[in-house]
Image (tube, rainbow, N blue to C red; front, side, top):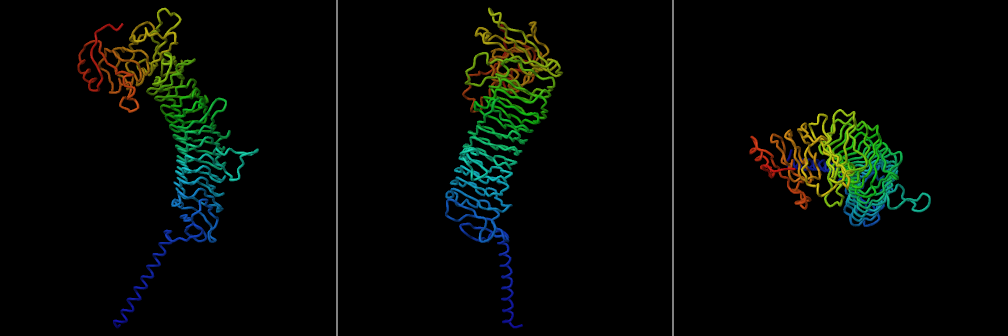
Length: 569
């Protein structure tokens, strides 16, 4: 073979290889969607007879997405397809009719000028983050084919206040709808996590009966959501964590907010509903689980009712913590546990017309379940600081009440301070102190006397060895003496109390650095309370072996301590 022939062969080979490589590159570009076509302002990818819109490059403020582009059926919208026109587009309408039409995650997110959307008639799902942070979006037409509104779908759409299923809605006449409310589609089965979180313009919403699940934080932070109408035969079984937290829902005995088939209520689900119109809640016997702090800080909730035959399997701590208006609670008769902080701060519940009864099936009571105190800044009468009587069903085999010495104000024979302790069945562990007296019983002259654990015969209670956390929370007396039998004090035993001095003869008991701390004054929001609740001092009434070591231990925790030999009367 001549040199010239060799050169021709090499050139041909290089050309063939280059052509093959070009074919591979073209194939890769097609397969990866990097080749596209353009028509009527839309750039799209072609897959056979179908196309997916990947970007909008037109100049219209009112965009209409067609059913076909150059004869190809439009089947979907890609992520961020309209993002380059975020400050331009004011409305989007879909004329697409493909039965499996889809919208990718975050397809329309952050379109800050978008005000109105009409979704395609056969859409099945609004995906994750589809319209997230579309801050000008006011109205969306969602067809009665959508079964799922995905997570974050409308999160942060703080102008959104109208949803309907038909763009030809009427605002007058027999079939009129309110154009400032959300009418969720009848086909809807699930509202996913944070779907409408922080949609602060939502004021009213209507939910049809087929909806089954409301996800975590679905309406969290919807501060103006007051009217929630749930279909009478609602099939909602699950309400997620923080689902309606920080809203302004309304519910009363006359117009109750009802979920007739709900099974699980997540943690913090209805927390911090502070509107004066959220006063009543009734749950059906289908409920098996209530998460922690589910109704906490609902400061106007005054009545809570659960069906007597409800089979609660789990109930988290603090379910009603801070519900300062709560006066009436009906718990299931079969309930076995009152978790920690369940009624913490519910002073009206335990200072009401009726004694609070520990049911016969209750087997455990958590720390601070009955820790009472009045929040700072509240103007209450002296009696409002006091606990009403706690009683235990006579058939209960786990808990008991130790009646303490009654106290009568001198010169007022009609007024008696009834007090006692909620303890275990052997009287060894104090779960809560209670005391109740009417306003006539309160007298500055009696305030400040030392409190001792004396029974109705005036004898020191010798059975008590342990004081549980928060047991004496919010008590009104200034000084307390506990008997030598005490072996341990729980954390925050005197939380937000008036107690300034703790007297004891016992030194061989357990405690933590928080036992005598009445407020966590390290928290920024509590700094204003310094001085309102002075530090508690621990004083030992007699000297014995080990006193110095005991005082050093207190000192290590920064607890003022010493010995005392004066008269406590």
